[in-house]
Length: 184
Length: 193
Image: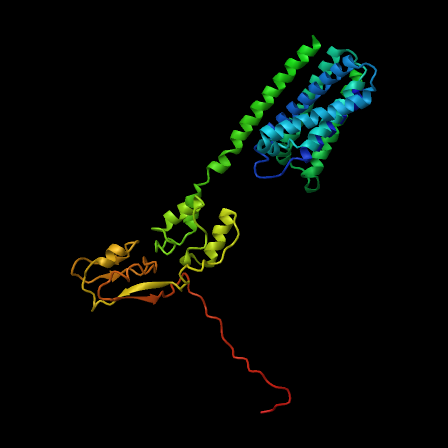
């Protein structure tokens, strides 16, 4: 795994998150807070998963990394989902912080981080987790504000709505692939 | 050292998420707080006849009792079955038919004072909950038909029984064509006239 693959994966994940948002009356008003909340939730899951992996590695070295990382990332996602359900179920549901989405984000955004060549040391791994969470939040915010900006464009009728967003996601993914390839 | 830094960042992210959730909850709250209180919404459904047939002093006290869950939705004959259905939908309860002890439903009527018999005692004026009767002591009284809700509360106090209820005449706003009634005769096969 390298950044050339990982960064477009984040763009695809952000697009999936945007498509899964509920289209109710308050969706527009809560689009940006929902993007920020999901970005922060992803940051929490990445930091928690990484921390638990460090502890597990120091307690019992030699455990298979893919298995342990998968279990810990899933556990951190479910732990966060359970806590949100217990403390702020209504608000979390309105912001789209459902457990399947949290689990998906935790696994898809978290697991590749452990296999990036540049994230070999603990500090580099922490830095990569923070940067990926920040980028993911930016991408979510981008997709949250894109529909309004696209409405102002004189797009052909065939492209309006979801197809235009998909095209934007592809362009962003290609740009991030180029950036990631330079970083790798 | 990295673990401590990771823990600090984790706490910071949790704090920020809490702030975002709290501000979003405040954004969500106005949608429910803009609605009027439940008793007012129930009162808007009730027919405002103030007749007291529900056992309360008027429509608003009945609405307040319903909002507190102290009475059932099937105690308002003037509201009819349509009113019960609207109350059931508002209060998220099942539809209930009229209670066995509830007064029977009647078509809308208005009070009419026999002016030749009226002695001007003003008792009906005091009984009318919607001030639909005009008059003064020892003067003839009359009913404002547009204001009368047909609650019949003026009937009992009248000492000379000069008030009667007449079916409300339809207004241009609520007038409807009557459906034509066509008599159908059964014709036996084979029988010819």
